[in-house]
Image (cartoon, rainbow, N blue to C red):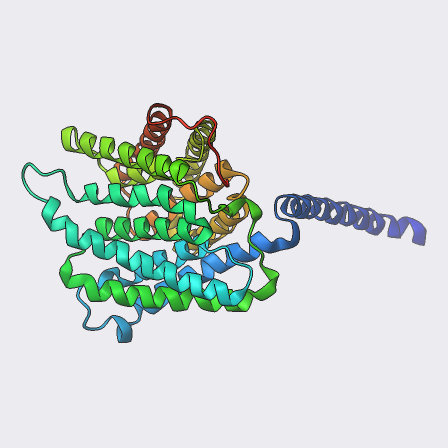
Length: 372
């Protein structure tokens, strides 16, 4: 056998390795091109990483015994702080770090205020023959739409007021927990501001996320009324037939309302598609909740980065990513009830459908548009 013949197998193996490397390189190139197409300049990816970082810092600070010691309802501190920081970071949309830091502090304060409103009104709405504390969410639903007339910060404050109400409702907080809510707001402000200061000029808000302020309050008023009326219907349904997760239905009906009937229809359809895709995908990952919870949290973090990247222009992908994140984080936190998870999924679809009905029946805005 000649030296050339002896080296032939080596050449064959080398060729196969080159092909494998080329295939992997081609796959990575396709992924890189896709990311650049939906997120040119990596700005949204940086924001996605900032969301995850803010949530992680706030949740970890809330879990420290040195901070939570002596607080009534300390078990909820980490949950409250993490969600306040996360959604404040989602709503913030400034270019200058100083302005961003100011807005983040205000947004976290709005979440605290919203939680305080729920805590104050819940006892008045609880009891035999009363609608229930979820009726408070109607006020938050109205403000989510109405405050959009004041631009990015107004829209964010409306959303954070609702988030604060929702978190207080879900965790069943009482007046004894007000100090915990206040501490959660402080932790959230710190946890959300620090990553924004570090991201610096590398991050720019997406144009599609902005809302143009307007002196004409009618479109915003109609949006608020539609969201509020859909929320009232859900409260009535909960009172009559009982819903497992009425808060999720109200949330869905609130956030699908857009500045026109056509816009609301599009958002509802995209939310349905996202929920139908994201929830089953999250259920597939449920076995990891027991075997590898760390991998589950890592998957949730990646999904939130995708959420930030897709939110401005691909609401369906954003909803799928958030639905997936919601399912897997609930499972990672120990909530493995398929009945409860399924209820949250179908009641989210119910809320979206009621939001669409409200948009079509309550002062339809076919020709009124402002911002996006």
